[in-house]
Image (spheres, rainbow, N blue to C red):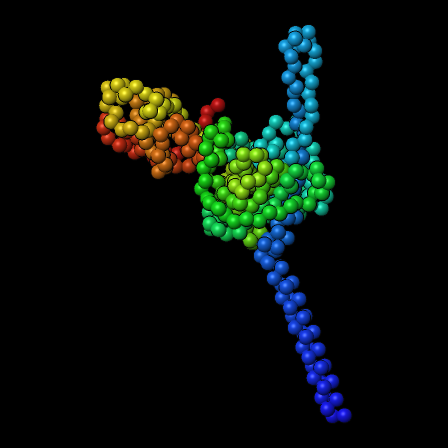
Length: 364
């Protein structure tokens, strides 16, 4: 009898031990699932919005039909994108190109399905940033982080609405990757136009149509970038995505909220690359350097002229950035804000000179 009791006691102890170990194992699995990325997504997702806009496209008519006054047909299309609320009073940040050429905003929808009534506060084509304002208060929002503090290889999360509300679900989707590089500059031959696609965050988090304007967040659930574009030969995601650093966006947002627009800074000059000028002319002018921007015109009321720059000078550096092409000068100019300090180096009479001035708003 005693022997049987000992066997039963032992079996009971083993059973309790197995149950305890199983319970501990389950708790461990649950704990491992709830990692920093999951917590960041739960924190940030409620502040992400899906944006649908209405655009009209004009069909091209054969000149024969135009001659006889046939009406021009216009087709309505829906443009899609994402955005995020960055203040509890309803301010929303997105890409300018999400709203560009839109006739009206069809809908701005929270993950809960709630549609917001919004107004456009303003936008800036060059930095590709726009600000909306939702009516109401106490909105879920995503705090802004510090994009200057990013580490190559750290985890980041792209949250947005790929393919928009065509999926009949306002909840945003999530893709995870790492910071592949920072301070990336996308060639103007790829992007075209005057957009400042430079100093970008590169990530391998998947971004697709509809993600534009959505947040790129860190593992703390803070916005570190605005998902803006992909590099792709097919139109779909191929492992290279780019985001505008949130620290640059903050300054643009401040301008838009205060002035309703991004104030245009200016240097007040025009120039040509030394490479485009006749070498004989350069020798005659005593220009012995091989790279720079030759100043052809400069307005007397411009800050650069007042600081001492003149026609015939050759700009070689602005704020420690070398310049070789007039577009280099323009891109540095457009990346500045009214009141920023500029240190410009230029060649004149065989010597390098330096001037310092503050950027002013262009006179219109």
